[in-house]
Every structure is written in structure tokens, then in C-alpha cells.
Length: 379
Image (cartoon, rainbow, N blue to C red):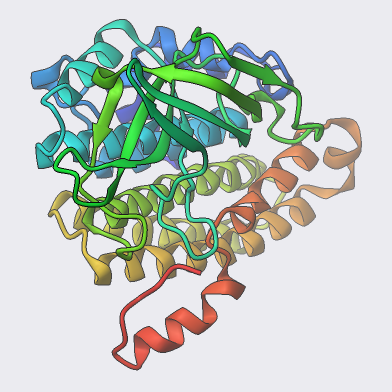
């Protein structure tokens, strides 16, 4: 089987026509602000990738998803990173649906996403220092009409294409016994929602990572999904699962970006065979680690030890990406670098995995504690 053939085959199966559309569009057009990539994703049925077939989705497994993200990353880094945020939000909502702790409306929303190809942007904390993914990032005031939310999310991928923004808020429990975390579903057209510029870098510009501001936005009760988690109760099962999905899909996405550089080396007969084989072996070994993590997710291993594994797989793959991307650029040579923006762009984007939370430096202490049989915390 040829390099990336397996990944592109599953992409073609689950999201027909997306790989063809991406392949036929110049890379730098896909990477610019206003890229058509998100539209291609929507038109191919991408929003329903992780939604079960019984709820009108594509029914992708975690293994399918990490391969899809690698395939997309090899065509458009911006699209891979942006869609990871959609899938991360969807995995959290599916988790809420499976737990059945809301008002039974989770699956109605999930089906609506799949049936109408709606795009979900993430306003979750996404692993901020000392916080779980559902740690509130915005203020909420309970009123007769629902919950009034204010706050800012930046950067917020998919900001200009989103149909719904998911945001975590702290609200009083319905039994009056303290507060609990909830996921607010904010329609993009809601009064008080504005999008403004934030991302000024040319790299990953196609991800639409701009600023979303909520100013006294009223969310009706039926669009508030309660989680039964508290703000200071540590990272619960749902948040742990969300963080695992985040690490898995981001790892697959950036591995795809590095794979785009490796693919260029493998197709260049002027590069010595030992060099080509070396890059191939190292890249596929990293892919095997990511796929092993995906298989554990499919086996419903979503506890603390699985989160630790997700993090060390992510950091290990991050190191491989840094090595293979640098070596690929060197092997492709100065002429490739000087005559096209593509090689330099891919090389810069490939190293973006190191910028996503939680950073390895901040996790050093928590990992040391975990190795000493203390609970894993997210720094």
C-alpha cells in the first residue's frame, strides 16, 4: 500500500469528494484567509463524521477519524486544524448524549448537525492551565428567558463559518444545591454575537481562527445542556474523554501536515533511497502510535491512564514531526524552498502541534506526580 493511501481511502469512503476537491485546489489557496476548504468540508458531509449512523451521521470510529484528519492535514493544514475543533465539540456533545444527563435534547442537536451539515465552533477552555475543557470561559446570568452570556473566545477556529458556538458556563443546579457546569449552544446569528479579526499570521489562516465576542447573548433553556459536573471537582469523565479526543485528533492532523512533506520526498527519485526509507519508517511509526491510541478510544478506554497515554503519544509524535519535517525540507533542497511557498508553509505549520495546550513544559510536574502514583492533573 502506498504512503497515505489507507488514510485517503477512508477519507473518500466517509466524506466523498472531499479529497478530490482538496487535491485539485492549490495548497496556498486552501491556506489563505477565505479559503474554500471549510465549504468543501461542509459539502462533503464532514460535520457528521463522528455522529453515529443511527443519528444520521457517518459513524466514524476514532481510528477512522485519526486517519481522516491525517489525510486532510496532508492536503490542507488549516482545514485539518479547524475541523479538529468541530469534531472535538461533537465528541463532547456525543459524550453528553451517551451519559443522558441533559434534557434529552443532545441527540436532537447532534442529528441536526449531521442532517444539515452545521458547523460547530468551540468556546471550551481546551485545556487551559489548571482547567478542564468545560471550565467556564464566559460569564453567565440566569434570567427568566434563559441564560445571558458574555465573554470573548480567541482564537476561535471556524469563527466565520460556524452555525453554532459551544460555550461552557456555570449555572445553578435545578435542585438548588450549588452550581454545575453546562454547555450552552449559541446560534451564530444570535443577537450580541460578533466576529472580529484576531489571527494575523499567514500560517493556518484558512482555519478562520478569529475572535468571537458574546455581549449579553440570551440562550434559551432548551439550548443549555447540563453536565452534572462542578467547576472545582477536578476533571470528570466527560472532560477527560474530551481532552483525549482533542489530543488524538490534533496529533493526527499535524502528522498529516508532516506527511505532506514526507510524501514530496518519497516521490523524488533523486533523493537517495536510504533517506527516503528512513523518513517513511519514522513517520509510519508515529502514525502507528496515534492509531494505537485511537484503538484504545474505540475500546472505550477513556479514564485517567488513557489521558496520560494520549498526552505522551502526542508529545512523542510531536518530536517525530519536528525531526521529519526538518529533514524533509533539507532533502528537498533550497530550490524547492525558493521557488514555491508550499514547502516553507508546510514546514512552519507542521510545528504548530507544540503550541496547543497542554504544553509539555507545563505537564512536567503533573507527569512526575502521576509517575509517583498521584492523580494526573492538567497544568
